[in-house]
Amino acid sequence: MEDNDIQKKVKYEFLEHPDAKEFFAPLDYALKNGVHIQRQSKPKGIFGFTRYNYLSLRQFYTDFFELYLSDEGQDNEQYFFIDFRKDENGRISRGNIPEFNRRRLKDAHLIVGFLLVRICIIDPTSEYQQSIDAFVKRIFEDYDEYKGNLLRLFAKNNEDISIDADEKAIQQVIRNTLSEFNDIGWVTLDKETQMFEVMPSCKRLLTLYEEIIMNIDEIIKGNHGKATSPNT
Image (cartoon, rainbow, N blue to C red; front, side):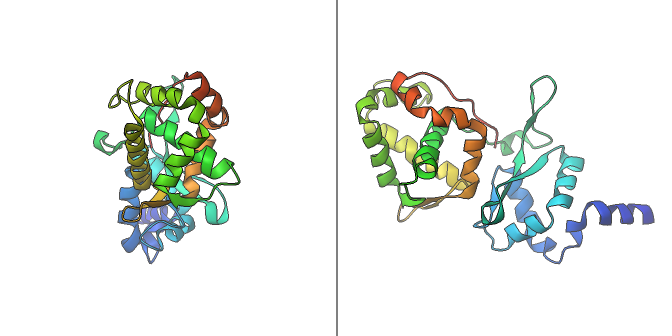
């Protein structure tokens, strides 16, 4: 018993942290549901708890759930998330997370994400905080000449949209996407004002799909290509 206690203190020091009782349960629930933990995350203090105990938390998720707690970004833009890795056969390891806790993004939502990163992160003239209407308007303005291609691209990657969809259908996809991104922490969305702000963790899309994002204009103009959804 004594050896087990020593091992627990060495490996899982977060259990001894004075805020463990307050933060570990909501942190565990959030991570297993695909949420990204960052400075803006609630409840206030959960980010600091995660950052301070990162090494022991990472060991805990590896040992008990075969999951990989990872981090990206630095300083105020650091964020934490459960990462899914491929085994030697190319299959994605999802650890011991139950099926109903696994969040899979629709391909159409990924396309919106690519546009979000391109417009709000890569483009230095764009603001991180803006209204959904302004974001939708910017998309249609930037791709006005290829609006038909954009509509068909969304239809191809979303079974809920017909090939002859109108702008309203696409606007709804964008709204649904931002609501989904709010749930996983890529944006914060005020559902009353319809204002949203891009979070540091949204840059994970850039890490995963930099080549596609940098060439999203050509993809839309040529109306080809299909993204593969990550399991968040």
